[in-house]
Image (tube, rainbow over all chains, first blue to last red):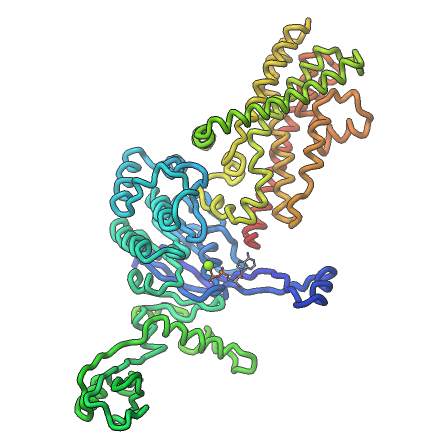
Length: 359
Length: 265
Ligand SMILES: Nc1ncnc2c1ncn2[C@@H]1O[C@H](COP(=O)(O)OP(=O)(O)O)[C@@H](O)[C@H]1O
Ligand SMILES: [Mg+2]
């Protein structure tokens, strides 16, 4: 197999922060002596990105996503650990490295604020040494996929968030980078704008086989775009693998929801179906949560249909929000003082290496 | 060499784009130029008034003062055109976080900071200064031709000195939270450097020729043309001083960027 596009090993980033004590006494104390503490934003993170892969880097606010991206793009130097990307060390070989990467921060534009979008593109063309022919061809593609043509004459400050994001995406791909970093590319966008951005990313990844890593809160982004997710919380990787695998491992549930006719006598809050319990959702509607580790969904279904007067029936899975919320909860519980020490590599079930991914 | 060509082209493009955006609001721009010119004219008048009240003050004739002060507008004007971002650096780049973007481009960060915005109206100062120098030169007999020929180049060195000193001060905001900092008092010192250094006492002379080398930016460069041979060593030291401070500036920015890379702020 060929060399991965990005290789991250034991990446650590700590920040010195001044802790403010609460209240007036704290403020006074702070005048004389500020309490410095060390915050570990990224804590021994390791992963590889293969060429052409599109990976979702997810986690709650403050998990360390942006800090990781900033190290991978060479903005920040790590406290310890290694990154090799396209054979270079991002923060050391910055000038050479930045030629082959594209970066979008959803929170702020990379275009020049006061000048027309098209002027920003011309500056970028010069900076990256893109030929006129390539420039024209790529701008055509951006116009087709992102409809940026009519935005070009306007200054960036006059664009809406969604319009700006489309321009930023186009700008980040103008030099056809080998690696694309997207930090919250859909933040603040409406549904239509999100859909635009997603389909563009899919297309760009397919057409150019750009390696993409994107951070997001929005798990729909991931569900639509990424086969592989890396989940980070408090600086540590809790999962690296497929979304499906993440689900199966942490919330291996199926929900069987059914409507009964006639409604059972007394409209009970719970029904027994063999060894399982169905909880009442509304009048005549019940749900069984199946733990897939214990029993096959089909076995439960068979009994439900046999024992009860089922009118209608549906089987669902927990959505990814729930799965992630569950993992965060488990992870937080483990970290509470008094909880047992974390086993090596993070929470139980944490997968810090690639062996298990794509399971 | 290729890097020099690349940066020169990029500079031209930055300038063109910025000028285009600025000139889109023509009336606005015209007003700014006029205001800037009135400011220059006012301070020029004050200088002339002051020096004509005391003819041959400290041994400088009226035309020599016009020559001196006119020349000082050249490096000062170049500096003003390019220094807009320096004043705003801490707020715009460090607090608002635009510095990240600077680091993501394959172009020298310092180049981007200096050349991302221009105070176009200050070009007026360069022009006014050139006119004043030309007029005074036509009135002054026996100017050194070599001294005159080197003036434009020395004006550029002067601008490099100003920009480097303020570049160094600006870089201090990588370490110091107090963003107001040292720039305003040092800025006031620029005015001192624009008068004949002979009018000051020794302390000021030394200050303007060492730590804050503004005398090298605007006074010493005129001395060869004006035939003040006693300043010859200082005149010829101008390029070295400019390069030294440019080098210092670069070194300090390197450190500042490394600091930014480790703290993210
Ligand atoms: N420059 C910085 N200085 C101090 N603390 C920081 C800095 N950048 C990030 N942090 C802290 O590091 C943690 C991770 O932040 P970040 O990587 O931005 O999280 P995410 O992008 O996942 O929301 C947070 O607690 C944040 O407050
Ligand atoms: Mg973030």
